[in-house]
Image (cartoon, rainbow, N blue to C red; front, side, top):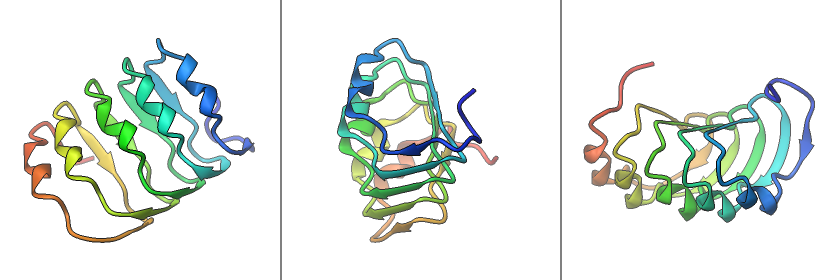
Length: 120
């Protein structure tokens, strides 16, 4: 798998063409720049694992369109901004890891809708 390598650069916008992708795992690389908004086109995605990179900018709104998502691991990046109340739309989420970023603001009350979350 392409995790834990020396891949670098930005995640290309063209990932939107991978419409059958179920797992997106590029953790522990040297990726930088924003997570492309086009990630929201990957509606079959069940898991996103992009931890331990140098990704910047906000969590794209498109992520909240991925209603089959059960795992979202974005820890240890340089993500900024706030956590959208739309996080509550990801009701199948079992794993959510956002630690070691520069996120700010309040934890949305909509997170209470994430009843499948479990400790990892």
